[in-house]
Length: 204
Image (cartoon, rainbow, N blue to C red; front, top):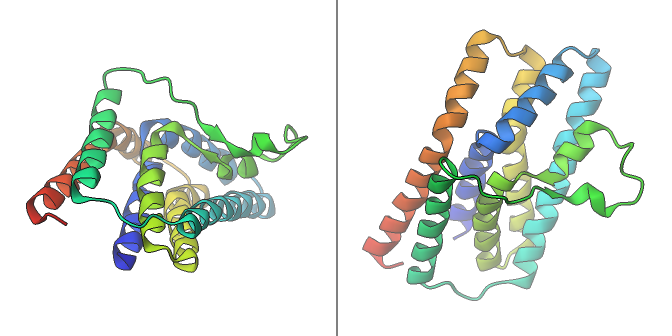
C-alpha cells in the first residue's frame, strides 16, 4: 500500500496538470512568469510550488491521521469506475463543480500574488484524483508517508508549469498542450477503469 500511494501520487499528480480545467490557467501563468525578470519569476514559482506542497501535504497527512481501516475490493472498483465515468461524461456535458480555492478562507487574500492563489487552489477536474490519493493515504495510516506523497503530488502537478516558465511555450509546445487537454480525460478514464478491472480480476 505504501508503494501504491507514492506511485499514485506521482502519476496522478502529473496527470492533474493536463486536465482541461487546469492546463489553461497554468499555461497562462507560465507564459506570464517566463516574461518576468528572473528574481520575480523565481519568487512566483516558489510561491506556487511551496504553497501547493503545504496544502496537499496537510490534506493527505490529515487523511492518514484520521485513517481508514479498510476498503473492500468491490468498493474500490466501483469508486474508480464511477470516477472514470465522470471524466468521460465531462468531455460532452458541463459539470458545474467549483474549484476549491482554499486561499479564500484567509482574510485579506485579494492582494495575494497569483502564484500563491494558484498553489492554494484545487481545480475541479483534479478533485477526483486528489480524492483517490487521499483515500490511499488514509488506508496507510502513516501521516509522515502521506505528507511525502502530498509533496510528490504537488511537485509533479507543478513540474510542467515550472518547465514552461523557464523555457517558454512556443507554437509546438502550445499545440502539444492543446492536444493533451483534449485527450487527458480519456487517458484518465482508461487508467481508472484499468485499475478497476485489475481489482475485479485479482479480488484485492
